[in-house]
Length: 114
Image 1 (tube, rainbow, N blue to C red):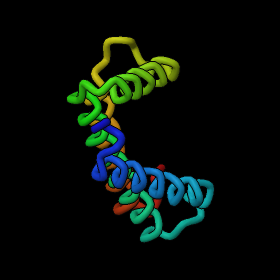
Image 2 (image 1 turned 60 degrees about the vertical axis):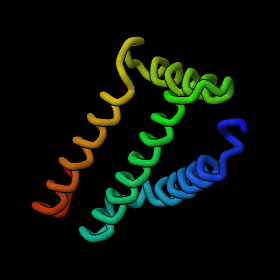
Image 3 (image 1 turned 30 degrees about the vertical axis):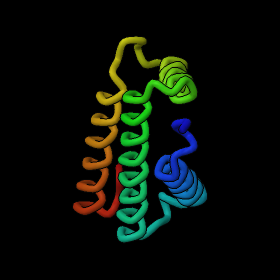
């Protein structure tokens, strides 16, 4: 069975897509959101990031040619955004997680992410 034929993988990818749509739909409203709405939005970002990290880990562990290609496309996209070629994507995921934690703390303390 191909990596992308797995029901688990397909369900995860569908959920990632749904989360991305929810997040992008409201991203420009973020500055006008209430404290609770902002915290909910950041929680969605955390959930998305977690699911992306799990999918990336599955891609890394798979020897399926399509999974290998997708992992390489993700790495290439990261390089195009300015990340050095040999940076482990898990470092990026961890840094993003820390950024979201900082955002939550600021929103909790001030009602703003700034």
